Every structure is written in structure tokens, then in C-alpha cells.
Length: 172
Image (cartoon, rainbow, N blue to C red; front, side, top):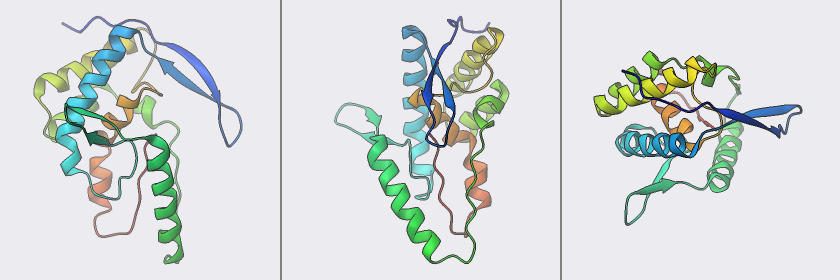
């Protein structure tokens, strides 16, 4: 039986490249569940991500974990991108705007399991996406930090496909 979720509300923030970005605002209960799920999955996932994944990672703290500060991660990624570009004959920059909405409950569950996550967490993630989807919100919620951690799990096959090639990956 799927987990009961609350509807997702949204708000807009200006996009640096123009226009606005629509962000998801989860209820307090769903925020807590999503955050805790991302922490459990991220704790298993961290050791399996290549060093070329530079953003939205976890940092160990004396009791548990926390998200790495985004500004520091972004600055590190920008510097690494400049270094990578200096030695490259060709540089490809891609921004997949439809990635988050494209993540289905089954894809998330499979990615969490493949990343070494607990099957119960895979089911919980799928159930949360299913619940929000039944309210009209498809895919990973855009905005909550936990979404980027779970996106890292979904994108592991991309990282493996790039193995041996110079690349950087940023998920925000």
C-alpha cells in the first residue's frame, strides 16, 4: 500500500539564465521523510560516487550527516570545470531540464537498490513519488536537497559510462 503523501506546493525563483525556476515545497512531514531517506541512501551511495560528482553530496558529522554547503561545492565545481576546459579540445556542457520530472517511481526504486540501499528505502522512495504523482507532481521534487542525493543514485549509470573520460557532473 503506497505511503500517504501531502500535496506539493510550488514557488518560483529567478533563473540566472532568464525566466523562473519552479521549486517544490514539501509539507513538513514529507520534508522529514524525504530528507531522512536521502540521508540513508546517501550514506551508502557516497563511497560509490566518483570524485567527478561535485555537488549535493553528504558530509559526515559526529552524529549522522548533513548536506555539503552548496556554495562551496559550486565554487569547487566551477574551478574544476575551468581546469578541465583548459586541457580539452572539446567541452560539452549539458543541462537536462526534464531530468527530475522524468524519474519514475520504478526508476528511483531500482537506482536505490542498485546503489546498495535498503529495499525498504527503495519502496519508500517509490511510494513517495507515486503519492506525489497521484496529486499531479511527476518525478523527483525540484528544490529539496534530498532530491539531488537521490538523483545521484539515478545517474550512477551515466558516471559508469563516462569512466575513463574526463568529465564533471553537477546535480542541483
